[in-house]
Picture 1 (cartoon, rainbow, N blue to C red):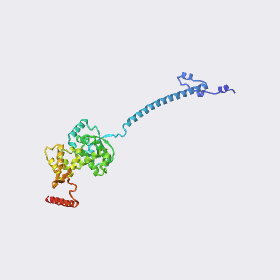
Picture 2: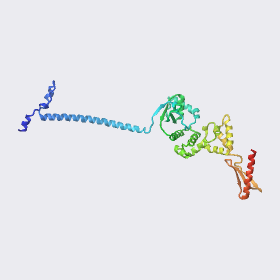
Picture 3: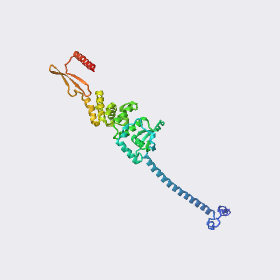
Picture 4: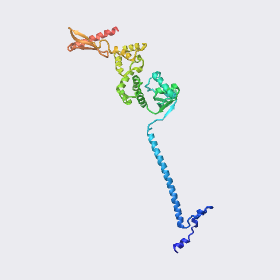
Length: 355
């Protein structure tokens, strides 16, 4: 049987779906032959694939847009790397740090009152303070310790406003270093305050030496030494000044020398100055404290001792109050040098007995 005869015997009616009622045109347009039906199905499948392809293209375009937006957001987030979120805290649950390098006397200054007015007008502190959470709430309900921003916190506390704060975990040394660096950049932090906190850090073993402390906080080692000297002055000497904030780095050595030369006399002069009203200006106080002790009687004008009308020795008082005996070469042999020592010892013992 030929191919034509075989094809004529195939029933293709099952492949042709019945025409919908009321839509004779649709049925009349359907192909009647097997090749036509196969071609129609292929066209429908191609059309469906084209539609799906177009939909996929649209989705890919949407994904490209989203990917581009994600890249933009990631670039924006890079600018916030390391940033800490701020939060509003009740100032009553925030406490003063034991390493605070601002004396409470700052809260009575005109500058602090001006800061309070600015914070009140703004409805709170615009520049956040920094705090660290405490391991546990203390007996007063304090949950956080101030890293820096003691004045801003105090202002909010007195105004009854919540304090804007950055909360960060850090150890003792990290807190100390960050507080010192932040506050040292402000002009109204005095050398005496710096010295007090440096002294406390050394006394508690937070740093093994002044040099290591200076390296950690990035401060000039000379200024650290001078600040420590100011903080080591007797309280009476500090109290002689109108304010401890008046003490300056350059005064540290002369004042320390004055203490070493005549501690009792210096404290007496300091107490006398503190009783004056009105109090002399800071520079005048410094001059009065250092002049007498730095220039004791005889300084700059040696006492000459002559033998047979010729200079043989001299007595002079140095800047620290030491009395120096200068003998001309050959004035004494070894035996008489021992005799001179005995005479000086006898003389000094008589002076002590009179006291």
